[in-house]
Amino acid sequence: PAQNLQVPPVLYPELIVVVAHDLY
Image (cartoon, rainbow, N blue to C red; front, side, top):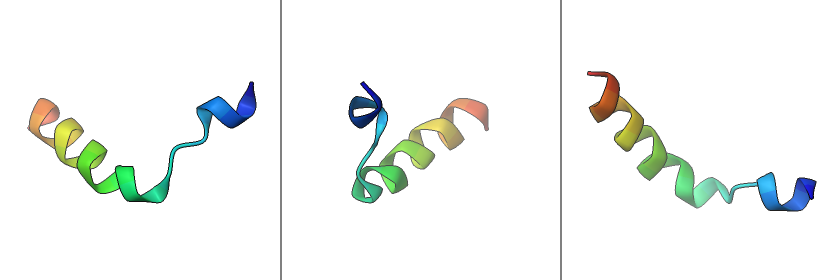
């Protein structure tokens, strides 16, 4: 369902940090 794909904005900063560490 589309609702399952929606991620709370609170989780975004941590996600960005993980992706940033993975890329850089």
